[in-house]
Length: 108
Length: 115
Image (cartoon, one colour):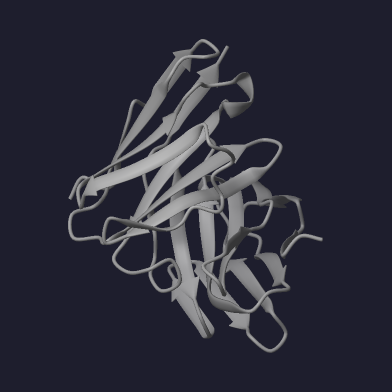
């Protein structure tokens, strides 16, 4: 069983749509990270969360510690949002677990 | 700041050769991470350093892999001898605090192909 599960694995949306990517984890964590990897391969850290909600531009990330669940929302999606979004959790014992990623394609 | 710098950006080598990947973290960051990404396994944490000291190397796949951080501004990941299954993109990242607490900044990656 994977410690971090993401859904959906693939997502295609029309420009302007509201997008939600989900992440569930089974380990105790100290922090959850959302990463964005563009087609060129570069990785950008979008958010680091330990509770509540964070917002940056059109991106919103939420976490529910009790339910061990996080969501990444993209409002007014744009083709440049097309990327792979990866959820990662820092757990106890210096462990770090990655989801398999959600591949997002936003069509103009 | 130039961000995390990795070199080389691409490496093609033959099986059995030694490969050395290099990373310069963001100045002032005291944590450094080495990751490997493959299609089959996705992103994996190999090892991380805090204040130049290896904290957790449980992700290092086998003895052929070794990592060092001789000072706060430089780290190497070495594979000796290399094998085709080591082909992957290797990312270095740094943060201003430990694995758990702070945002990590990723380098552009080194694409390694072992023939």
